[in-house]
Length: 257
Image 1 (cartoon, rainbow, N blue to C red):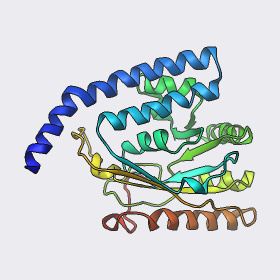
Image 2 (cartoon, helix red, strand yellow; image 1 turned 180 degrees about the vertical axis):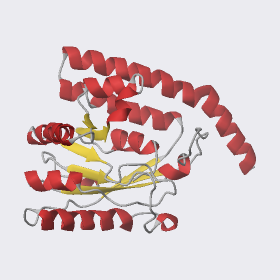
Image 3 (spheres, rainbow, N blue to C red; image 1 turned 90 degrees about the horizontal axis):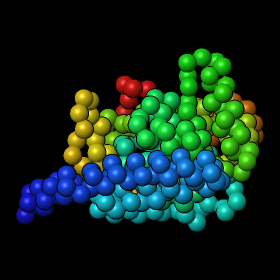
C-alpha cells in the first residue's frame, strides 16, 4: 500500500505540483517586478514571495507546523538564523515565518531565471565575497535594511547540508547583529532534508514529509564586540540544534563550507 501511495504521489508531482511550481514562480517574479516598479518595494518585495512559499508547499501537499510565533515582538527588527537542510527551507521560511524580511543569499542565485530577477527587484541582499569592497557593499545593504526597521534572514552555514545534520556557523550575521545591537532569533527547520535530499548532478523527485519550523526565543546582546559575537553564535547554534530531530542531532562537516 505504501509503495502504491508513493507511486501515485510521484505521478501527482509530475502532472500537477511541478507545473504549479514553474508557473507560480514565473507569475510571482513578474508580479514582484511590476509591483516594486510601480508601488511600495517593501510590500511587493515580501507579500508575493510569502504566497509563493505557501502555494508551493500546498501544491506538494506538504503539511506545515510552526512553533514559537509568540517569541517575536511586532515592531522589532531581528536577524533570523536557520539551519539549511534543503531547498524547501526557502518555501517554509518565506511562507510561514510571518515577518517582512530580506534574504541574505549567495550572489549566484541572482542568475537563476525569473527567481534572480525577482530577488534583484525586491532588493534581496546578495552576498558577494569576491573582495573586501564587495563584502562591504553586502553589509552596507543589510545594515540599511535593518536600520529601516525590517529584518534579515540568513543561513549561517552558507550551504545546504548533504546529510541533514548541521555544519559550522559563520560569523557574518552575528557580527552584523552585534554592530547594530539587534537580537538574533534562531530558527530550526525539520523535514526539508527528508523531502528533497541534496544530491550532486541531478534533482530528486520530492518525497512527502511534514515540515516543522521552530522559532526560538530571541538572543539579545549582552555587550558589544568579539566576545558578544562568539557568545551569540554559540547560543544560536545550540538553540537550533536543540530542536533538531534525533536522527539529525550532532555536527557533521559540510565539504561545501
